[in-house]
Length: 128
Image (cartoon, rainbow, N blue to C red):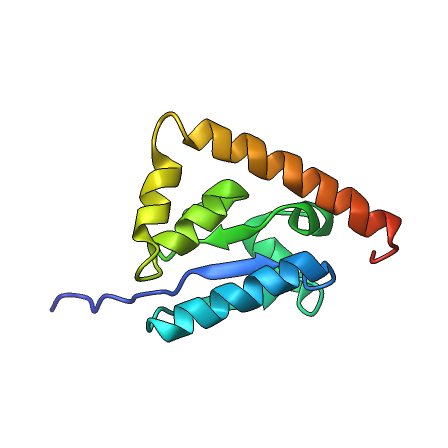
């Protein structure tokens, strides 16, 4: 007898102590709900034990978004945003665009620069 397939949802690991991150996640949740897309969202501040699932430190997730895709692939930073766009109806074009060979390195560069600045800003504000 064939084994039943299990479909796991993507799981988003995010930092709610960052107001910009929190707003981005809330916006993505609304977009996904509006088109019937689903994901599990895990605030690492409420569930620090979940960090073991992705082998990341608290500081790493405070600086960059992490998504464990349905197939188990771990996407970090710009790739995490691309992974969410890929599973959200109406945002597939964004995932395609961010994956283009000429744009992918630019999206990583822009994300990493923004994430580093945002992380430092939150630290200066004493959010963690």
